[in-house]
Amino acid sequence: MKIIAVGKNYAAHALEFDGTVGTPAEPMIFMKPDSAILKNGKHFYLPDWLGQVDYECEVVVRINKLGRSIPARFAHRYYDAVTVGIDFTARDLQRRFIAEGAPWELSKGFDCSAVLGEFKPIENYNLAALDFSLTINDKVVQQANTSQMLFGVDKIVEYVSRFCTLKTGDLIFTGTPAGVAPVAIGDHLKGFLGEEKVLDFHVR
Figure 1 (cartoon, helix red, strand yellow):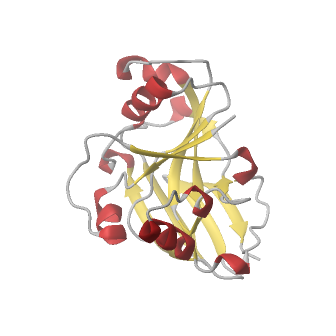
Figure 2 (tube, helix red, strand yellow):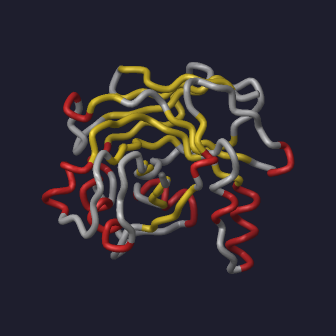
Figure 3 (cartoon, one colour):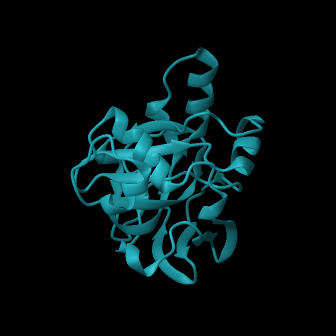
């Protein structure tokens, strides 16, 4: 399986990240390896050698069938579950790579950098207008609605499937809203779809 992620898919986050204004012509796509997955509420052990590590709360969808060159109007047939995930980013490393004009996948794809909550059946949610949020130590730090995405899930599926075949079990991290910041040892993170808690883990 593969982890497909979308960068700068919320205007407010793009602005806070690098001052980007406006909608790009195409989604910004990057990948994480399957070794990045952390689930079942396991602790995230903060790698001290990576420098600053930021949380990025995102809606994640799970692909449920093989598909290639999928039109957006049929994309909803190719995912069956949704959750909240954390796309951890080694920010110091990412900034250095960007400054050097180098690929920055290592700042996103290190072990346990893709934290997954409990998947829920997609039919229970309106993915086009879904509230989600993240709390740290019971304080809301990120909150958004999927209607604010620059590229909706179906458009992402259409775009990505032009380049690589989607397979059962693949995951799509759909981008983070504004409010990203570093995590620290002792932090307790909880992620919500609407009012339902689907993600709960500690940083050690």
